[in-house]
Structures are given as C-alpha cells and as structure tokens.
Amino acid sequence: MAKVDWDDLEKRISPIGLTRYAWEYWDCGYAADRIVGERKGYEIHAPMPVIFLTAHSIELALKAILKSKGFSAERLSKKPLGHNISKLAEEVCAIEGEDDLLNGDDLELLEIISHLHTTTILRYFQAGYRTLPIYGPLSELALKILLRASKLSGYKYPHYP
Image 1 (cartoon, one colour):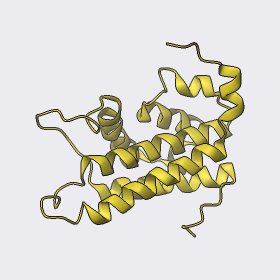
Image 2: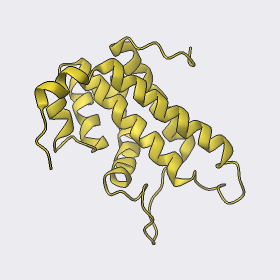
Image 3: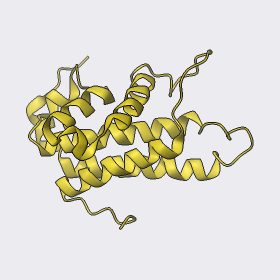
C-alpha cells in the first residue's frame, strides 16, 4: 500500500468539496429509492444500495462540518473517525452542541447506520437478521446534516432551497 501524502491530501480536501459529494450521494440514493424502492417487495425497508448511498452522504456531510471547523484530512481519515458515522457525529456534537444539530433520537439512528456502514453489510450480502433504518427518517436526518454542512462550507446546492 502506497504511503499517503497527507500534505497533498490536505490541499485537495475541502469542506465545499465534501459537501458537494455528500449532496450527490444523497441525490443518487433519493433517485434510486424513487425507482427501485417503489417496487413490490420494498414496502418495509429501502433497498440496501439506497441506504448505503444515504449513509455515505451522512458520512461526507459530517466530515464537511468537521473540516470547516478545522479538522485535518488525516484526522478525518484515520480511526477512530474514518468511516465511523457515530464517532463523526460525536465530534460534531462536541463542537456544535448536541441539541443544536443532533438530538438523542438522531444519534440513535446514526448508531444503527454507522454499524451497518462500517461492517460493509450495506455493500455486501450477508445472510441473517439485522436492524435496518426506515428510509424516510434517515433521509430527513441526512438533509438536516447536509443543510448544516452547506451553510458552513458555503456550498450552494442547486436543487434544494
């Protein structure tokens, strides 16, 4: 594995870029849910790719918030943060204040999605039962985080007021 040039990465990763990608993942999840999620068999939960796209959107939006608050690309990339949505949310709450952006119910939902996201269950089939989020509340939570990331980064999302 090649050594990471953290100085170069720091120059290329910005809050506005993270926010743009976060919106694009959210858009793709939303669009996929409107097509695949409306099919018979998806009445109970959204398709896994939809949940994955939404989870990744949340990860990137939380990273955009933290990057706008001075977190380095290296810190955002390595454990304990990395792809751990719960840890990213904890850091955001420590800076923003829990009730200001994320409340207790939000954090519980993020804990569920974080487990699914970090264990790759959303990307690779694994037999068995698991707790899955309901897409509506997950998507609404993603929007709330995306709007905060947009405000902090200055990214003007062209398809949302």
